[in-house]
Image (cartoon, one colour):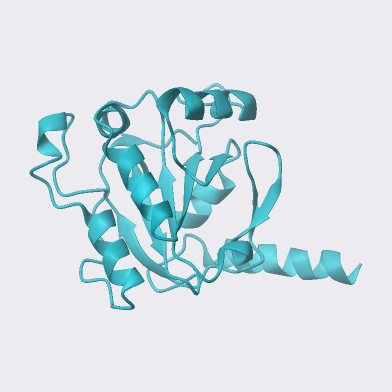
Length: 198
């Protein structure tokens, strides 16, 4: 009973604090389920940076970064550097972009995700907690779970893969600073992409 009350209290606190603002420390007790159905907590990732990526495989902005290999390279580089990468799909049932857990795993393999964790967030709880509005929408937590970056993947909001090389990659730069123990220079930007279909 005490455990249940504690979890309820944490859930109520999370709801009151949502959407999370820059500088917020995400509660270690906050839970979500991965594509395999395993319940995870943010506490298990403490000690290393965490990148959260909101995705929708049918979104042309997302396709730009996956078809070019940009997103999967970012994922692989981040993980090689010790970060955890969580890819989230908050599309609701009946809406464009919705993926059930099994399909989410299939899509991850088909698109070559290098993500540490894939999360089918059909109820939108994680997306609404973070205030995710677009796909892609990116967030970075430092090793203590503090939200230190939120916004776009890069500086050029287009469908054109040729623009990737010209753009400033906010995620890559922020991760480099976080790993070096520095403050993130550009900590918040306007995310671009397709709307999250809650």
